[in-house]
Image (cartoon, rainbow, N blue to C red):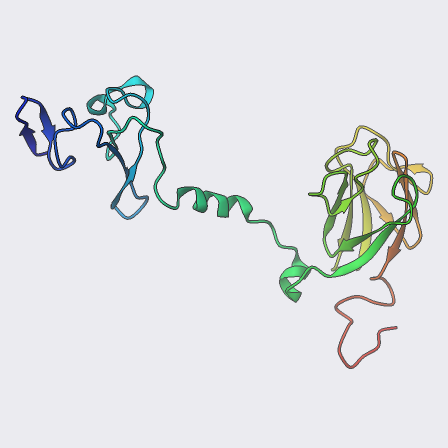
Amino acid sequence: MAATECGHGHIYDSDLYASCPYCNSAQQVITFPEAGDGRTETVSGGYGSSSQGFGGFSASESGFPGVSVLDDTVTQPPKGYHSRRRADEDQKTVGDMQQKMGLDPVVGWLVCIDGPEKGKDYRLFGRINSIGRSERMDVCISKDPSISKENHARLGYDPKYNRFRLIPADSQNNIYLNGETVDLPTPIHAFDIIEFGSTKLIFVPLCGDRFSWDMAAPDRNPL
């Protein structure tokens, strides 16, 4: 610390401030330490009044090492802080088939044969597919209010064994497979009927005994 006295008798650290922060309270910044590299980054903006910092402490009383509170506008984070956090949040688990093939391959379909979306088809991908009303779901059945918004059920494809399972999820309503209640993960086969809410779906697999993406080759007709 380089203790310096200004012309008005204020003592301040000239290593941190180019001029007396008490005399020049309008020119205020917040300095954040950059994570991991020992450098600091200065961002315009503040936190409250010119006399108080985080939690009501003054700049000299804040007690946060490497943080200088000198502004009375809104505090801004260091450059790149939000983008780094957003990138971490946006990272999603990649399925085995997607990682291997470079895309999320279709392995079958559900087709609505009764309900508000009768006639519509929904793609199934080579992983565990979520089913619900939300657009976030792999199978989005948005027009049936009796279906949970997210994770009403799941339909999973296992590429190792080339088979499918219907998996109950977070719904409080029953799920039926060929008229029978499904309480546990249950194998599902071609043209089985899934029913929940006001919706009935028929299952149409692409992958099975006659085809799988591991079997497919440019010079070969698997069918």
